[in-house]
Each structure stands twice: as C-alpha cells, then as structure tokens.
Amino acid sequence: MKLIRVDMNAQKIREENVPDAYAGMGGRGLTAVLIDAEVPPRCDALGPENKLVFAPGLLSGTSLVNTSRISIGAKSPLTGTIKESNSGGKIAACLGKLGITAIVVEGRAPAGKLFVLTVDAQGQAALLDGAAYKGMRTYALSAKLLETHGAKNTIACIGPAGEAQMLSASIQTTDVDDRPCRAAGRGGLGAVMGAKGLKALVVSTEGKSADELADPETFKESAKVFAQELRNNPFTSKVLPRYGTASTMAAVNALGAFPSYNATKGVFDGWEKINGEALAKTITARGGQAQHMGCAQCIVQCSNVFVDEKGKYVTSSLEYETLWSMGGMLGIDDLDTIARLDYLCDDIGLDTINTGVAVAVAMDAGYKPFSDRQAAIEMVEAVAQGTEMGRLIGNGPDAVGKHFNHHRVPTVKGQSIAAYDPRGMQGNGVTYATSTMGADHTAGNMLGLYLGKKLDPLAPEGQVDGSRKVQIGMAAMDCTGMCILAGMGMATPAANEAMFKMIGAKLGKPFTAADYTGMGMRVLKVERGFNQKAGFTSKDDRLPRFFMEEPLAPHNKVFAVSDEDLDKLYNF
Image (tube, rainbow, N blue to C red; front, top):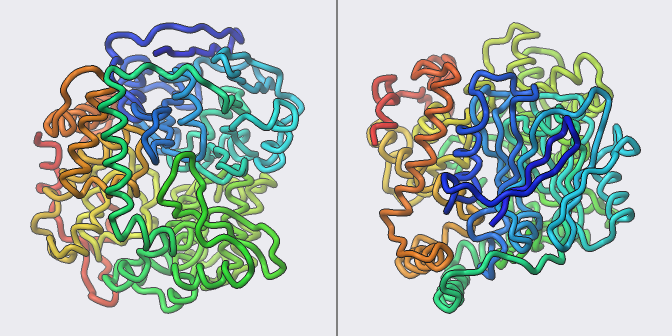
C-alpha cells in the first residue's frame, strides 16, 4: 500500500506509505478524503494548490471481475466543487497489481513545460520530457507512447482540449485494445491535468506486486459467487452484451424523459434509428463488434466497436449517454454522425455529455439549426482548432449560454444534465440538484426504481428519499472499483453477501451492509463538507428555473420537488 507523489514544479517523485487517515479507502473514497485534507477549498482549480489524484478502487487489481474502474479526483474547474471522475479500461487493474493505492500529482510544471509520467513493472515512477507530444490528439499520442515505451503498457492522457485547459476537457484511458476511448469525462479534470503540465500517464501492465489479501481463500470463493450472480442476471448476461448501455433508450423514451432538442421535448421521434437494436444491427451488418470487452476483467462486455460502411474502425464504445447528447439532444438520428462526434471527442479529449449539450444550447440559441449534422461536427472540431466558437463549446454549456444570452441551459453548478430529463424522472432531478459534483447521472440514477414500479417518476413524493439511498449506494460502489453496470449484480442477497465478504477479506476485518452504507455516507459528507468550505450552500442545490417553468411534452410536467424537500437530502 503506497502513494506516489509527483511534484510537477520540481520534477521530483517520492513514495510514502498510505497515511492512517486514508487507510481502507479506495477509488472515490480516497480521492474525497485526500482532496478534502490537502487541497484548499477556495483555491484556483487550475492553479498549483490543486491536486490531481489517480486512485484505483479498493478491489482493483484483485481477481474480482469488473473492478477496473479508476477514480480521478481534484477540485473541478468546471463546477468549483470537489470532483471524482470515473473511467474504465485497464489502468485501475494495472495500478492495483503494482500495489499502488494512488498517484497524487501536485504543483504545476514551469510555464511551457510538458511531461509524461511512467510507472514500470516494479512500480517505479519517472517523469520524462513530453515536449515531443505537445498538441497531439489522443489516438496518435497513445500509439506513439506504446511504440516508445512498449506494448505492455496502458495509458491515461489528455488531448488538445486538456492542454488548452478547456472546462469540458476529459482524461482518456486506453481500453483492452489500446485505444484511448474510455473517458474520465465529467468535471473538466483534463484541464487540471493540462494545467499541471502532465500530458500522459503510462503504466506497465506487467505488475505482480498487488497488496496481499488478509483472507485470500474467502476472497476467492466470494469472487466466484459474485461472478456467477452476474452470469445469472438477465440484464448483465444477455441485454447488455447484446445491446450495450443503449438498451435503456426505449425505456427512458417511453417515460417521456429523453431530453431532446436541448430539453424542449421528452421524446425523440428518431430514437428507433439510434437505439440499442439499431446500433447492434448496424455494427453486425458492417462486420464490427456488437459485443466487446473494453475493460480489463469484464464479463459483462457491454462495449462495442463501431465501423463505417467499409468496415473501418470509427469508435468504441458508442454509449447511451453519447447517443443522446450527440443524437436526440441535437435532433440527429444518424448513427454515423454520432459515431464521428464520439470519436472526435475522444481524440480531442472532451466530455461527450457536456460537449453535446453545449452544441445543443448553441443550436437552441439559433447559431445553427437543430439536426444539422455537419454543423455539429464542425463545432466539435473547432475545439481542437481553438477558434472563438471552439473555446465556447470546449468550455461547456454555461459558456455558450452566456455568450448567446440564452436562458435554456440545462446545467447544475456548471455541469450539464445527462440523458434523463428531471421533469420526466423527478428523482434524477433531485440527484442533479443535490449531487456534490454538479448534475451527474452516475451519482444516483433512479431509472431502476421507476422500471421496477417502486416509485412514480412524475410525482414529487418519495424522490428525495430514493435519491438519497441511491447516492449513498453509488458513493460506496465508487470506492470499490466496481463498474456501475456490474454493480447491478448486487441486487441479489448472495451477491451482496459476497461483496461484503470480499471487502472484509481485503481489509482483514468483518465488513457488513451497515459498513458499506457507512462508507457511502462518509464519502458524501466529506465531499459536501469540502464544497461548503468552498462557499457552496443549499441555494446552489437547485435546477435551472426553466425546468420548473416549462412543461415537458408529452406528459406536460414540470420539476415539482420543493426546495424545502431538496434541502433534506443530506439529513443522515
């Protein structure tokens, strides 16, 4: 168990044992407590006082399936709040197998300097000159880094958007096929990486020094049980491999909660052209991969590889959120255009959600018409060119809305909503409003409660309690390194028991359901405490006014959860 601290100003690296205050924490939990303890809450997020933390999950690097999610944390330049952004690929598993609990990037490189951080098979880190990579997009950069450092490495990197410190800049991680198509997209953490002068992190895939398990036999047996529960679950074993995350589009559209044309409609007329079935059919007909393993140790395989009509690679993986942000939100029902936009965002290093919504706001404001495919591509490409419009798009929906003096900007704390309209899914509106990290669907998505008929998505009653429970559960899961989709396997008592046994076997002490809930609560309290010290109050936990004033077709509802009820979410 070790931390690697990288001083970008002095270009020095030191190792230290994990402090007692951080013991037993991984992933989002570790980024939360470390940022809260070591970063001044009111600092400039792009200044030297901020820190960028790469933290694999508590169970990453073990034999447990689907635990290759890495948490990347910092103070967000987009929201001004604490932020954890989550990505897949191989890097979390590789850091875990090296016994690295976290890499903490501190300070800021001298002006004009750019570096690459490498971690070899023995876990030794080195900071190398990265001037040759300046301005490179992520696909060319990743290929060059693998050519230089060897194929048995995995990468986290930024593109031109991160170097330019744009507020929607992502950190891209490579998948099992060494493509930089996995993204820690939300919160603009690519801008923090760029501000520190770090172009890429290159980590060996050959590590064999993972932290020892306190009870390896119990862990092994429990891991088998958990994996079997995933195989028994129809959603994770059949639906997701066949249709990917796009499988949820029909359900959300049916709820009238698929925000389209910049959230002026809740149903997209062209949804059947871009849904999971259409995506799988198109990919299969062209010889791509409708089922694909994108992340290390994944047995769900919800990824895909989208190819053009000639069978040439375009992007991987085309996810539900991007099909929405670059599709329905823009009035575009063409998979080829959406795939091109997805590739551009990955290559330039941009959050597809924030970027798509920024383009939607520009279209809604009259800059270009909805459904204009070429205009959408040109606006995203402009980000890499650094034009005036490109910088607006790259800095997100708020920047675009301010420039055009447009009122319909679907963001909270500067971060855009995701593919669930809060008027059609009231509980998701609660999560958007109260999340410690701006509007964030993975912080507490309520779709499962609605599809299970446990809650009325259009009524305000019960939404705060539901969101609170889901937010606590997600904060805990984000500590483990477990994929949110595989986490659905915890719906069974056997999977729950197996998970708690594995955490206990890792930590060397009994771990219960109450401990799991307590871990999630601790994370949320730490994050909220940081935000309060940064100057945020309950008045910031609000949706934009248009959600309360503009009814959404087809059900003609507005967001109806009261401010008083929103302020009760953190009563725990």
